[in-house]
Amino acid sequence: MKRFLICAVLAALVVPAASFAAGPTGQDRENASRACRALRAELGLATFRQTYGTVQSNRMNAFGKCVSQWSRTEHQNRISAREGCSAEQADPNFAASHNGMTFDQFYGTGPKHRNAFGKCVSSKAKAASEQAQQNTLNAAKQCKAERSELGPAEFRAKYGKNANDRNAFGKCVSALAKAQSS
Image (tube, rainbow, N blue to C red):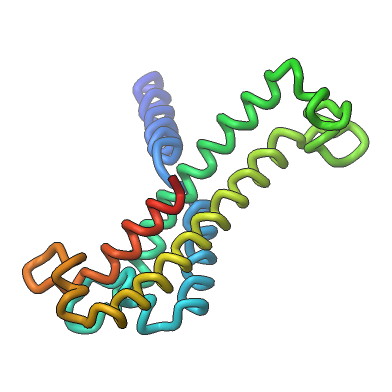
């Protein structure tokens, strides 16, 4: 009985830890929420809702949809940043291209530079997130201008993908933002 109880407790601890490692973390959601608030302020409420909202009557779910999408983006940015920092850390020519500084000296702070890897990941993930936000803002502005130029009906016909083409603005922004990030 004692052995069964210990196994059950260990299993209860392992399952949640594994599920957190696979997807976005609380930190990713916090960063996503911050990004969505900034986008909402920059775009304006109406444009923000058209970009992210899916409920056809009022698009009031835009903030939640935005956070969900950006959580995945933040998670992917962090993974990419880790991979990039690992490659930089393993690069034997790092010092030559960084004014003779080692990886730890370049990214680390404090007397022993022990936090270099974390600082590297943080700076790369933040830069990627800021670039993605800028791409989204630029795409939204371009789509708004194109919608004004084409007119609502032609714009919906060009970008819409559902029964009444009400998702046209979001599809336009998504396509242009992805094109800018490539």
